[in-house]
Structures are given as C-alpha cells and as structure tokens.
Length: 73
Image (cartoon, rainbow, N blue to C red; front, side, top):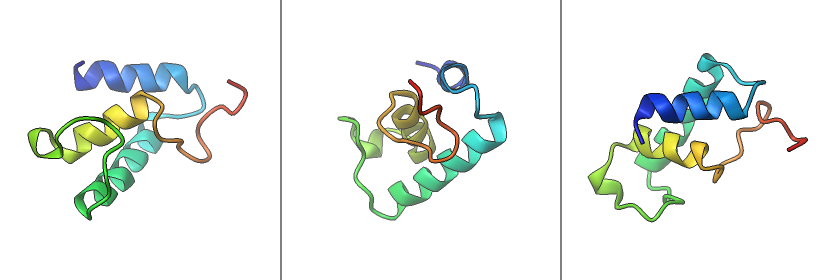
C-alpha cells in the first residue's frame, strides 16, 4: 500500500490525531527501529525504509500511539 494511503487510513481511523501528531509518532518509532528495536511485522527491515515500516506498523494497529488513539474502539 502506498504511503499516502497508509497515512490517510491512519488519520481516518483516528480522528483525534492530526498530521503533525502522526509525524511525531512515526519519527519516534523510526528512531526505535534504527536503534535496534524488532519490527512487529514479518518484513525484512533491510528491504524497507524504517519510516515506512513504522507507518505500516501504526496503520495495522500493531502500535498504540498514546494520547491520540480513540480508546472507545
């Protein structure tokens, strides 16, 4: 899935989150991945950029972004 579609899906699924908050969340997860954190997806981290991997993890709901995700789901 294209990055633009992933971003739109995340923002649609989480109306309390805006572009800037998503960028911060992706940035923090990217830093974690670059510093040795294990991906929650079954994708070779060498075959994809860390930022794209972080966005994919958030889009699939594998990560909870504290303070921005609607808890009532």
